[in-house]
Image: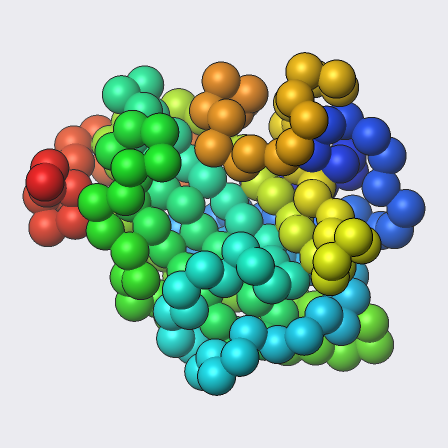
Length: 190
């Protein structure tokens, strides 16, 4: 599956090549690749490539969210500098796990960056039915928020990537056929 982020968070037009996200099934879960323009924003301070980084959304990042009909969702964030952040959420903005380990590498070359992550199947909530993807870059008043499935123009005054009602359907069973029951190792209710 391939997705291109071609709009701002509220449906406006972007002024650069789109971020391309590809999803592919694997025996261990899902492989996600990112091909994106590199905006050369400041690096996450003290961040280590291949390791989780708290509040990564404050830096140049590409995000993907996977949601089920119970409002359980996986939020994944990827930096061009190799850091990542994964959160499991049970309801709107209610994290139950964060900073999960992940196999992730990123490279930067010629004003573009590529990332590749192998996401374990157990990190996904059971019966994923919807998703959305985002890209964030820029500093200060140049901060730019982009969305695969934007919110309607004029409906809100600021971006919020947890507006679950704007996520769109995905047939994740084609890539993760065993995505039927929650993995209790990760999806314990607190």
